[in-house]
Image 1 (tube, one colour):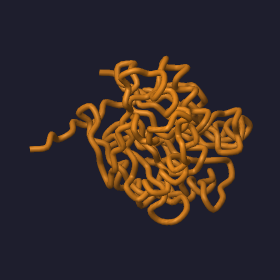
Image 2 (spheres, one colour; image 1 turned 45 degrees about the vertical axis):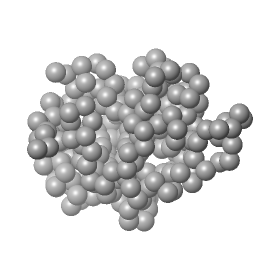
Image 3 (cartoon, rainbow, N blue to C red; image 1 turned 30 degrees about the vertical axis):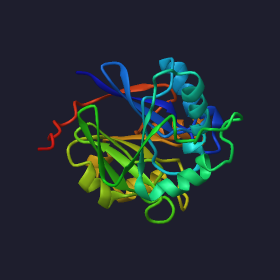
Length: 250
């Protein structure tokens, strides 16, 4: 079985030319799970795969990561017969997510419909199952505690979402040789990682596995690549190791 991660976008909130930061985990060339749903990401997904995602994980509730939810609602409610996407959301984010995308009165002009009707909303805490694989959810450093999360497919991929450096977390959730898709720009700020910080804080075994995204522009990406780092490109696909076998619940 072949596993890969495709980057629909690699830019930060102020870099529309690079697309909203979002990836799709693929298994044997087919999309399994979309991570984050910015306004540019959902259109990129539908262009790539010909229709809306069947499974989606939300890392946090900034608009460049959830702003495509209304478009996804419309595509599923009015266009994609038989598709009811599973939406996996850390439980601490549900009220905020609903307030930002689901609370608008009269979600359809005709009435009689709730925003979440076309979806299967699945609250998660630290793990969830999808297609026989167990994914691990972990907190990251992006705003107040409990407001942003990353995702791990054990043995295959760790996706940090937006974060400051989290070496103490990665020592636990990236301990099986996983590729680490990591928020990073050439220069950091109070909500995001900078390259110098990662080089200062992370041991070499983590640095060697980083795949950087969420940067400001093409020049920043080129500068990070020139310093020897793997930098994700919009639309590119990267091979992943086979995930570790997941224990089936008794």
